[in-house]
Image (cartoon, rainbow, N blue to C red; front, side, top):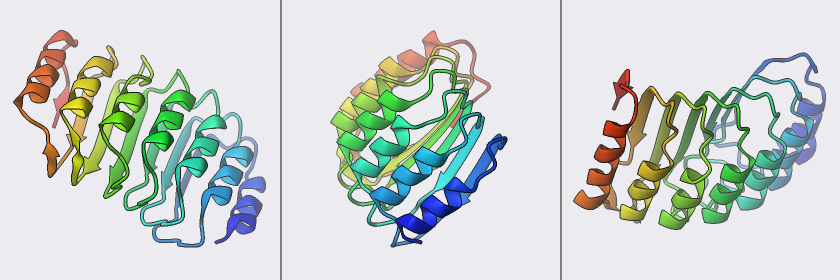
Length: 197
């Protein structure tokens, strides 16, 4: 589905739509222009957006930045899976953090097998987590570039209202006890969690 096809799909979406779920796993024709078109045409009153772009190898930082710049302001739930999008990196995560709507309550992000993502990108993203998030899921790795900086940034940026946290950082080889201790201290400062895994 090249950019004009995705733009055509997105431009035809009903303006009254409150939930949008799109699954484009391994659609190799979708690139930055397609993702930008989707963001541009996304209904402005959308409350929940679920995008699975796993394996869309032409998606990069510019597409993620364009999507984030056009997130609907009333969005309350955001689920993005950019696993195996190997050219998405730190600049994309910075733009994503900057563009996140402030009223989000549920946030799920996956950047599994994105080798360009490192501690710097994770720190930029975590510094911008919306304060009202109560459900937070994050999946990254495997990576030698994700380590103490990512976990420490997550501990600092964890939203204060969070009730459910799911972290999947399998085989992130740079994570050590210092970062985990910081995360443990963060969890103790939060209100009682309903679920941590």
